[in-house]
Structures are given as C-alpha cells and as structure tokens.
Amino acid sequence: MWKAGAKRADTTELRRIVRDELELDDDDTLTISELACPKQGCPPVETVISIFPATDEPYLVRVCKAVADVEPMDVIAALAWGDHPDSFNPSSLFAD
Image (tube, rainbow, N blue to C red; front, side, top):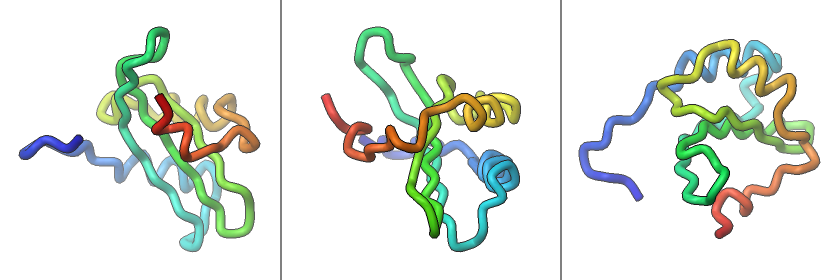
C-alpha cells in the first residue's frame, strides 16, 4: 500500500540500461517495481523488471535489492541469468 509522502525511486537510468541491453523499441513496454516479500527465504525487498515485447512473450527478471541500490551490473546479470521467459506469470507477484 502506498504511504502518503513516500518517496519513489527514480528508475530513469534503470529503464535506459534495460532498453539498451535488450534493444527494446518504443512499442515494447517495460515496468519496474519495488516489492516487499514477507515470505521466509525471500529477500525483504526486490526490484522486479517486467518486459512486455510488442512481438514476443512477456517475461520478468528480479534483482534482490531496492531500486535505489540497483547497479548497472545487477541489471545486466539479471537479464543474462534471470528468470526464464516461460516462467512469467503476473498473478504470481501477488500470490500468498
């Protein structure tokens, strides 16, 4: 839930890195979210990068850091070794 006055992290640079690395076009959609995970064994906060290519299946990658702490190499590593496109299920982000 959003808190009044909560500061949102700037994702401009993160978006640029992802778009450059994946050579995304303007027709491709990209979302970056910072999510808390209360489950045991899950990092307390993770950055979820969801990619919705206009001509391909959507997929996501995760970085086990807050958005403000993500470095360019974290993004490159997540894109290279992250979640497989076949495992994308948007509803799983909100499952108990």
